[in-house]
Length: 567
Image (cartoon, rainbow, N blue to C red; front, side):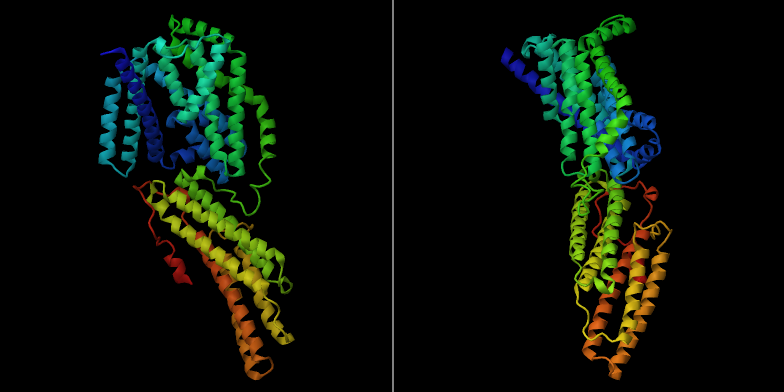
């Protein structure tokens, strides 16, 4: 075999090894997320009471799922869902950066100490057997994770063979001097941007250093560059996202860039210390172990730097990203990062629906007084509600493309029904609020009509899902039910009185018809609001969702039939 053919074969091996590594990492992360169900979310919620809890939780869960990006998305989802404070989420993100160093230790301990094919192939076989025999179940998801773990190390083995076969002369020279380290940092940034995975860049650097392709200094520069390059993922995820998502993305960028700057400032002394530490621990200056230690220590250094700076950083970030995101018409809880985790997406949808409902009920209250006719605020409020309904519909469509459990998918149509009820309520009340007073208003007729509007306003206040007496918080829509019954009684009294006045000739029949039409619209709006709060109160708690087989969401849901029958 000629040299060019040999090199082409080895480059193909490198490309295949990188592909296997990325595929294994994806399968491992996705499989563990599906197998754990809500366990990861419950752990994240329960273990983030203080900044220290948040830090250790970020480290632990990132070490488990092998993806700092997945942990960052989960943290964003919990902040958006109101289950996690921004400060706690910030420390989860910092912890996830340090937790990502576990990948390097796994590669160093297992990828360079064992015969990898004998180690990896059983994982792939057992994992795929579990996946094929348990398709759509937790066992199948766990099997996918196990197979991904094996593929990850099989990819590392192919990378090792490729780098060892190519030899040092095959790559451009990356020296250990200042210029070589600067070039290595740039290579690390570009590789991570292209691969969209800092762990893949780390694996490449470890195998290249282990194969003698570059010195430890150059590998360390690539690792520093990988930490900077991975911030692009956070930046892209924050485009068009909520304010908290952009704040966390900014924190992620600041943490990684600051850590990289400090690591380069103490680059040579840190490597000398690591070399001496490696010799003391192992009796030899193993290059791969030195690189893993460097990766861990400079990420730990970043966490230590954040201890005195975190309070100022939180204040700085909370004062940013407010002007456009916190406008009423912009979704406050929905972004594409949350859509990737269906249970988190469900929680975010519920919060956004409650917000949409509160805005619809605010419009309704503004439309009920006698002086509200033609109020310019009503058109602005209607536009806000309609914009949120479109955003919720688009978000549901995005979530429906994810793999999810049946009890999660069954709620999506119900959430769309609730949004439709709120939208109809807003449209009808906007129509009522824009109508001019009925000419020739008789004092006796006003005494019949006004109590109906007063009762409607009382209902809109009682049913508001974000009020202090929100039906969902009170254990059931009983306040709304009582207010709806009071409205219905006032409506029937007014209807009978209007018909009697029209038949007796005391009021013009045309005016009676106009009053009845307006009251009928008001009754429809109350009915739509009542249906919405009933459906919201009937939604199951997220903690009760089962871990049944993942499926595609059904086109329709039966969960609202009892509510319809109640109407």
